[in-house]
Length: 381
Image (spheres, rainbow, N blue to C red):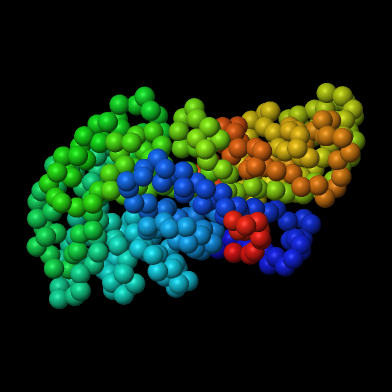
């Protein structure tokens, strides 16, 4: 699990620490944005993969306190960790069970399992004489990853109806291309799911973050916000700020050295960048060992004292170098923002040819997570 610092009063982690500051007030704000876009739907907040790297337990507790109707995780171990931590909200396991031995803890902890493969139905069929397990049926309407063929919906529903071990909670699918509002795949998926939904009087869940924000016809009974909860845009060509979202994670690292270099001096491994003139060079204590992507393109910037400065040379395991010509009186110990408040994660993701999901999930255990409550107080996770 990612580490969290113990914060007392104004005490900070060690000066060399990489810090991921998690603004729980921004999380609550983003949940409210999801509710405004889908006012007639219940909300299943997605907290899988350590809440996209933000810390599963603090995020889950905050969402539950804010009135999130249910939480979704990918795997059984995530759901069991939430239950063991005292989270009593409805929990949906999006990948369902893999092994028959997982059915009993699912019952005991009142977990809702997503059924997406015939293997799972066979496990339940063999589990005779037991209390029913709460389940969702997932259909593959076009993503071709997990889910049953919609053409099989009627016999599948009949099978589930005949199994006393199954208590169906709803129907589900996942949108593959909803981030692109011009892509015709989403209307096709919605049409297929509408045909399935017409076969049973059950709640339906379709919309991910992109669906919530751009495809109101996908809202149905339950929406499943993920990325938007954490303050990044799920839509191509639209910024988080434009969508009314606030960044939840601000990743910071200290300036650990400042020295002058001369015109023509190479910087970093391979000497891929040379100083165009005499200039002050800063070294920041973060690298790919902390989750800062090595693949960044030339021109990638960080934020120091409210000013954008370029990263120069290659990203190392523990350090990056920055051109300090634009910063008056920089000092060792100054905090540098890698993404977050003032520097959107989407911007860095584009420079690294990746997506914000990978940035958030890639922040390693070396980064201390510091949580700021809605009222501005700070605490460890």
